[in-house]
Length: 354
Image (cartoon, rainbow, N blue to C red):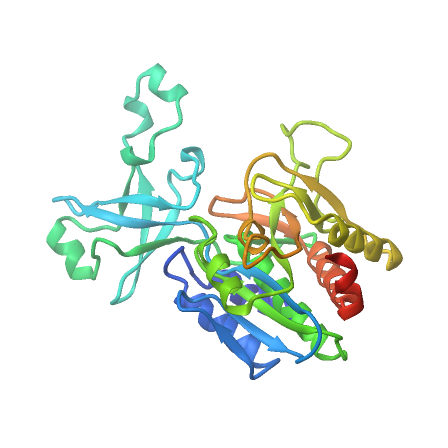
């Protein structure tokens, strides 16, 4: 396994549900510190590495958190009730293994419900509500579950190890949303460190994106960027059953440039600069126009007096589930594009954008 794959494995195998990002923040800090000794953090846990001291301030950030759950109740028979942290759909949850992250140790559990054999025909037609589910950790009583270390309020993470598929460009992991953005931020900072960038760059990741873009607001308030890039994943449309369109987003055809979503309309001049740079460098890209959903860009561009902001994502299959797939070329092309764009953003170029 090469160094890049090893980094992806470490990022994706490390847990970090919203509000409980300490483990993945420590991994990010370790890798940021290998590039720069200038580490910036806000008081919620968002983190960035800084390089450069002159020119406009550029912020590029993924988000540390992944969709997960929280324990809300332990039944008298030792089963765990829970609520989602981030967006979940009941169909992708049943019979999936999870890890309950207690203070003592991590406990394996499985999400269960009433057996399908005893459901009525009408019940089988509907998506099971999450409040009808439970997590089985093998305890036989509330007391035994508590002896294992479980407490109300403990976070719960999905479980699925990183894997390179037979087509070695296809990479499987449980939480590309948004360890992909974390990876792109780290690799872009690494590339920029080797160059004499005409600006000051802050690269890292925010907390609590999946529950309201919270760390994006606090990190932007800390950094006060002049330009920002939100690094995330987008929905791939290249699987059976997706609407057939010529412009559907496919793995391996380049990063997604977000022109619009529910939280932001991309800054026109910055958008044009990114597209022009991609064409000049023969970097493939795909345009992403999405009427729902949003990213940290929704908070970045509204911070201070307004920040020209762009979303640069990679397409991913099966996000907000226990497993997802991305294409390695898309990650590499995102790094290449961001490196080229940021290399252009000197004071004169920035002045022409605003």
